[in-house]
Image 1 (tube, rainbow, N blue to C red):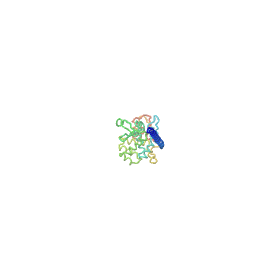
Image 2 (image 1 turned 60 degrees about the horizontal axis):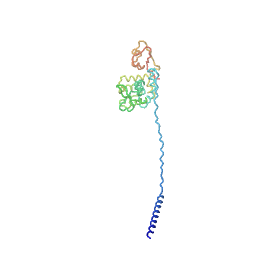
Image 3 (image 1 turned 90 degrees about the vertical axis):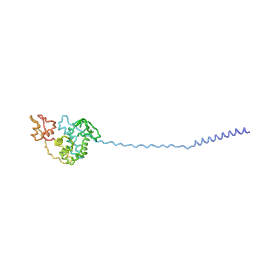
Image 4 (image 1 turned 135 degrees about the horizontal axis):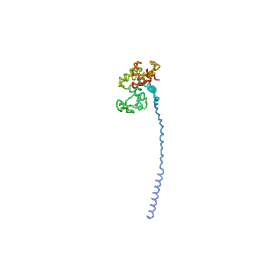
Length: 280
């Protein structure tokens, strides 16, 4: 009897075990599925890059080949008179003084320092200068000078140089049309060591009628103190600068300045200016 019951009990246990495993399988299959949430990345906004507006470069016209000194200077004045007037309007330095200094310091634009560095006023680096530089023989060998990308920055630096140093402050108490006072004041303040520096500036201003640019800025009409026509003299045999200076009541240096002479030598047939040459 027991032998019959045991197999039945064993079979019953197997049936129960199989039922439990099915329930587990069903319960696991009925688990809730989780949905994936996809977050869209924000579309980046386009950044608008503003183009930098650069000031136009200064247009420099070269003098004609074989030009006389007077023509070279006139060409320089035509190139830079507008810049000099702008600087006068902004900083109060007479345009005539700025132009005369530029002509003298740069050799009317033909100097080596001006050609390779756009430096028209011989301003050295000093300790505060962080811009480009070049090295040039001056009072000492290979001194450091400021280099500019455009000549107009040299003119601006000249204005800042004078307005930013206390030793030049007395200049700005002078009238803006007192170019002789400014020329002498520059020498007195130590701008140049040459004792003839003021006279050289005054001579250039008179010869090329540079005060008219001061008058344009000041809004005044220019009074014509010089002859309407430039008088000239053709050198004859036996003439010297000394004899001509006595004859026409002018100094030798004035004659040299009027005619761009670097020595006292003159030649027969040479035409000399006896009065300041107006810039056309």
